[in-house]
Image (cartoon, rainbow over all chains, first blue to last red; front, side):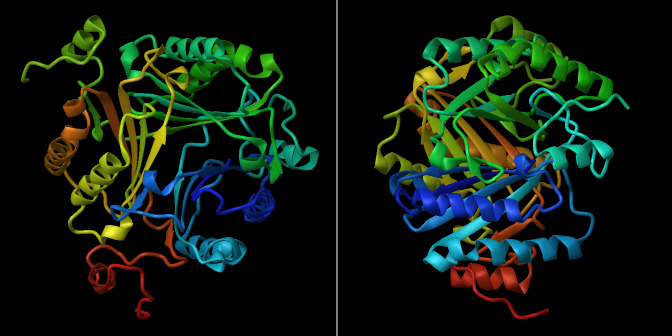
Length: 141
Length: 141
Length: 141
């Protein structure tokens, strides 16, 4: 469900860094099947990457789409953003990078995994996908 | 209007595959001018592409923005998603790839083609663009 | 806040062109701190870039996310789109490129800069960030 796109300078992260970063992203969604969580790293050279109209080589810009869940209150939003800071800080300001992240919420009805519409939140179907760790055909409701 | 971004492993698709895939995407929007339909393929190596925190090399992740039209009922949504499966399945599970797709709906009022705001749905202006196959100046309404 | 992603043919823009383009993007947001404005240029070869199912090498496709502000009327939307045409036309049709741009509006509550939730529109906090030209800790309200 969540798709994280991470724009960063070439060489900012090693393969191991990206692996650890992606695992930290998964840790932010403990109630979802892990396979819902996608992370794509994209290198952008300074001549193609601008903040405030100035080329940057130490900036990480993260764009996220949330599909499966929407936050129902500002308290939950704030708590989750605190988790983001804690889980990802080591890969962001912890490396001396400046950074920005924003999240969009997109309609869960317009979503396919392996050709199937994922089960609704907190249903038996979602529990099955969580337990199986992969998308499996759902019994007709 | 629709912009399809397709993340895939390097070498997953040949130039001919991408051409056929992009034509299949156009076929999903028979009522729209074909030139509304954009598709961008992006190669992502396994060390930068994670699903569930694990690097993947046989996964296709598709992110779509819909601009010109929004679905008005779940029945239409389901019917269209069935069309997606039929049209694109050969390039996805038909190739042995795992895949996920999600769609966002964005405001049609914030959209420019060639500097012009595209005509509203089902207007004479849209019929003109459909017939011309390119964006042409519209008569002032 | 705004994140501009610009897909273009390889070699369509020099480093200086991209610099000037990115500065023109910043000029569209005079009331915001300049460091809110991110622009990422992405080269896409014709074999991976399709409009209407046909490969293109002279097309510029721009996708924008607006976070900090939403338009409150169609008149403001139109006026701002006119500014876009004026500021960016020289880099688009002025270069002989065909182009399309669309903008999504995403929730300002799901946004972090340097680990902080940016100040609300037109607050003392936002004025402080605008004056400082960088994100600084905000007094607790």
